[in-house]
Image 1 (cartoon, each protein chain N blue to C red):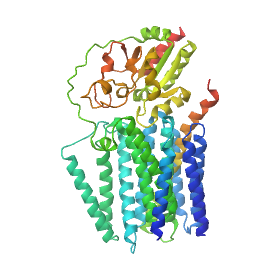
Image 2: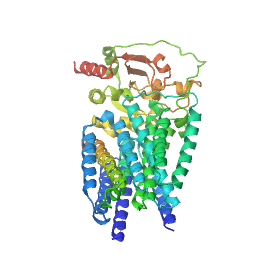
Image 3: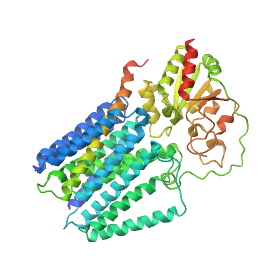
Image 4: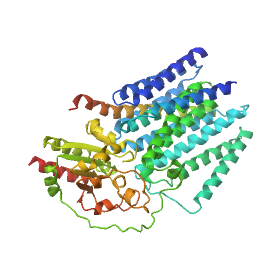
Length: 451
Length: 97
């Protein structure tokens, strides 16, 4: 029987690996997801029928409750709320690893198994509370600003020591529940303290990292209960999550430790004064410029998600194309609140993905664009990253919209972005600010084209 | 010896994970992340065993049952949102100009 179970786990593993591979190409991604879910189905069914299960009552209850909640949440979530949904799912995965590690505690375990139980509880708990807080920050139930307090490093160091000590005590006396409760509590605290100092703008990195953690937690739980498929699938996710996190960090020109520990660099008083004046423009006047344009670049940011403006953007794109203009989208790797957030939203609005260009593709030909329309993006188009050495975002690669012939910035007000940094773009000679709700503005433009 | 085998498996899986993700276009980062996230719900397999391996009601059993519920949310929700996102990506391919 064990041979049968383990061979099926090999099949499931192969399906996971092929699934992930196919997920990496736009054309085959959906098939990849199907394969991966098939792998999950194989693993679950085989475990149910052939692993010596004697009581199905609680399993069935867990399935029904979890299945209904998961399916409803997945079906009802708006595309704009996807980042927080993924964070929440991820948190539940971490919690499951914590509970599983806990359930594996019994007397007479080897030291190695106890250590892996400790790790699955620690990482699972950290993932859970960290993801919940990330969910709160993304859905703006909790302030998105980095929260830092005096002595934070000291508290963190003390917490780490406390975790190690309670881990040792737990390993020495695994049947005493007190140590276990302390480990669970400290893990929960660690997750909160780890995410608290990280600002909303860095959330794509955090989500991707927490995703990796939930995989590592699953792998640790796999060691605890001596189950190979947990080890394999968990470490696959852990490794792929770390790579993805690195891609994100590279896009911001920051190291991972800088993202995790520094909050967002203090805004140092820059010696350079921002010069020039803000030139507002009404949407109706913007229309005349767009009508004459032959190439247009749209640079979306989180503001497009907030205003739910993706469909209006697509409509404008069609009108511009009908008018003989070429329209491209310039997508910064960390625009939005989740890796690839903008791509998903524009895909929802039916924008063909070959029009979505990455930063490296649009920057070299920026001078050739007649108009660059910035919709709700701020930090990712901030020329201060190139020009102002004192700026906290100095050195971050940005989309150089200021080098286009004309720049329209669709924006509610003059407030600065998530990073809290002033944006000299708004004061440039070729920049026109179109104030107001992005969707309203776009609709005005669309109407003007209709007339 | 068992442990050495498990670590062996772990190391190989980590390398496969690294290699799989290295070259993925930014467009797919979100679906990839949520798809990988669904896979991390593999804890479900362990949770099933914990919840059903014994008849008598123990703490482990209830912890296992709760783990089944949470892991199922992760798995079902994760695969479904991924599929929803990818369906949008796919739809355009036919309609592309």
